[in-house]
Length: 615
Image 1 (cartoon, rainbow, N blue to C red):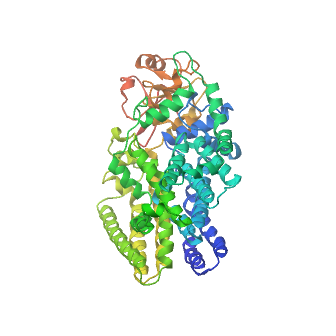
Image 2: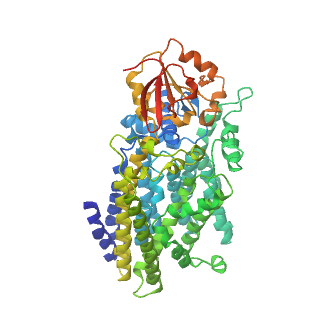
Image 3: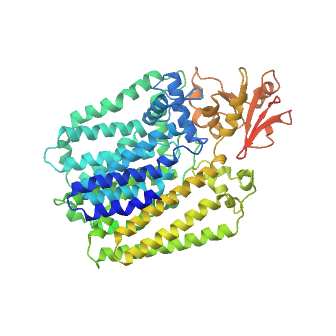
């Protein structure tokens, strides 16, 4: 609660100060405080999850163990799908602090801090310091960036590099002869983006900058960007890893090497929905667009007014624009191009996260203009209307929360949450697929976070409406930001409660406690579904399944360890002299065919069996 009491003071300093320089200490302090309370507080829990979370963490761990900083490996097999920068960061964190859950999350959490400060700087440069501060607060307290830094994916880092890219680009537009620092800085950041997310890291900046220059009739500005030297700087950053990866992973017989798999299969064929293997799903387009707006919740309620106040006209774009107008167009293109790109491609819920900072900047500038406008004014009226809509949403959310609280009961102590869920395996290729398993009965396990979530929405949105009705937009924004601190804390609490469904950590620890040389660990299903066994048990896994997903391509190389089992090769192992641990998502796995087996552990709807009694 002390952190919440600091909000009015910091906002008041921001409101009352006159010189922009006086805003900086208070603004930075509140930005760092928000980051610490929201992001650092949740770095130690829950356990790392099966699938992407521990696949990526395991790749970083094996990078460190193998001393191979060029080719990623998971379960001893080449993993050539991803660019390396995030893995370098996590491996460096392991090297400095040891392998743990918090050290796995640390690079992303630090990336969030860098992004918030970058948005503060970019917004200040484009719109003034107050708008930069509001933009950073909006981003720090938005729903989407928080959710998609709870597991290890690089998309928030892409947002960081894009923010810095457009900061440097805006600076180049302010002078007839851009400096080497700005041009080369832009090139370095684009190179880092490519090392973070592949060709996307170049496509988005080039798309935004190219379309901006085309719309403004200023293509000649390209000639001012020191293209030859900037290209050389870009290649110095981006090319070495790609060259080394190609040399370390050449074609081997009928197996195509890194260049084909990484560029053709993972970029072009993925975009065309022809990637092999097809082990992924795609979000329906309308849902994809709606979720994009949700990721900036609750501030996205101000987005229509923010876009409306931009007031860009074709004729105006062809004339000399001031810095604010240029920034408006760049940020709007930043948001639109990413959404449009994935509207024609395969897409996951989180693919738009790199463009949420653009929404934060546009909304932050609207909040600045609203707070500086006289009372009454059209901007104040727009803020009041939006606060009324948010109030209705808060009341409805509270009513729904109370309904579920009244109609659900807390499960008895010791109840496994999986017993209260249904299963929708056809949805698990989506990042939120498991949450579709929730039932009315299972909501009883979430009573505390559900109550806190509902109350926070009601009180926060009521306070926002109350203050804006009285012409104090500043306090309304404080109320929304404070509300989101509580909301995101409740989201984290619910995530911790649900996490046993998403991780095999308890089973991995059961293996690690009993593992002896010669023991064998087998996954009865897709490896990704039990990937946390690798990370937490340190054991090499065999997989009773046909080759699919992340291990499929790398396992075709001649030097790949043989991890795939069939029923015919599994049965001799189970009936042989070695102790075998068998992971399954079924209490009665078909693979055992009634053969003698002993349950070792169970957790979250997952089971660990052995062919030998264990203690």
